[in-house]
Image (cartoon, rainbow, N blue to C red; front, side, top):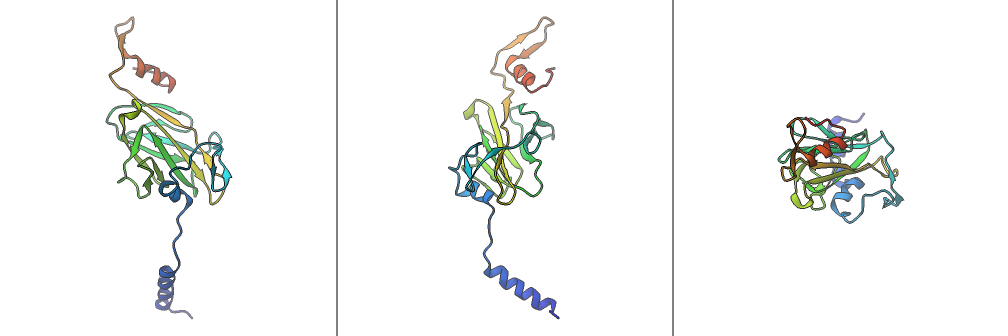
Length: 192
């Protein structure tokens, strides 16, 4: 019979001797920043494929929890100053990496943030706005189970509802920001 104290001692020795391994997702945010995350690229020695509709997708929410984009609604509108969170829907045990353009990931929001704060692995990301891309944020993810083929999600696009676009009145005297109105219509939202 093995005594609990002896078992704990053996496990402690094994934990100290056996190196820990990181997932490939970790390497995609640390040392593989130059590895492209697009359909057709090679990741883990295999060509990536598109995530099937309805399987995986990014979800972007504002600070109130309202979904701005998801795997079926790929275009959304956000307000300047919104705190946006990004997660991946459809994952159970799979590893994933979220990539962002037009914003950066808050490095304090997750433990595995890298690639100049453009990627995060296996965690919800909090975005910080970046004005270098004229208010448009693009978000997508790479998902893989174990060492299976990597699937790339569709790109979600978020347009900033800014006041620098031309406002105009309609027949009834309502004022609209036409850039925002077009983005809302693309996103399937009815403008106020």
